[in-house]
Image (cartoon, rainbow, N blue to C red; front, side, top):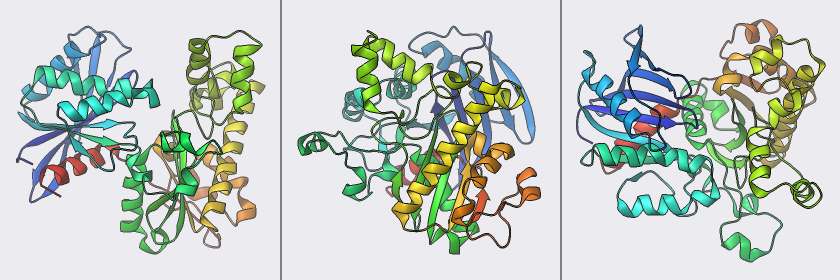
Length: 393
């Protein structure tokens, strides 16, 4: 990896998160963080640098290729007085399939393989690849790397990854993959740094945001995950249904006459917190509401999260620590309390004062399970993996 600035890009369906790092003494130093909401016009880049927060205008239309947006974004970043010319860029890609078991440098062959994986994650994979392709067109000489959400789970025992389907389908790739792997890799490393004794044991990490999943880890390695073949699985999410009886999909198509596109839209965009509440996909709005349906959506989310912790504890044959992370996990004390209350039988005893102040450890001294709140950092993992890959690590 050449000395200089490295851009980590984390593309969502309607937003782009980014971070810029400087390589110094074989370490990465954070220079700036940014966020761009593609739904808002005119576009505004929210940039945090050196303790200062600024809002930079981007004069660009949001097209399907994102070329104009990326060109305007790069121009703003490289003209910023505290930044400069980029040495390379790394991307979060949702699905690595069976082929990728670590980060990869982007070339024609790798890009073709990533495109071939789009059917495994039809909505997310396409978004992940848009910025890769746009940057190749705009800066063809700029080194690019990709980091995968599935890789952290790739070494799970085959038994954990198997569906009760014909074996031939498993060999063809119809299996449990797990996602949010960059977040879990970061949490595993941070827990080992802050609380090594707990990290060496049996841990469930709960990545709770608009997309949500949980992961069972033993000694920092993935053992099991709530998400399986797709990002629809596991606990309910902002607009996604979570685990669903497959018979429901058959019923929706056979009895109600919904098309495949209708079912896909329903399960990805009109279910979850939004579907149950009928009001909002935003946890903050639901907690502020007095509607019974809003309270039911919150209780259902907490019920399913607690149930998944219990299931994953079974996979681990015990539980030593529970870690909350991501937007809801890090900032929503009420939701954490609802989940922990349902885990009292497992030995979880919450320290209410610590929870309300979002302390790092929110469990009581006498709790049989240590409970932590640790912020995640997917962008740092993207940059760390790029650094190691391009350095030959």
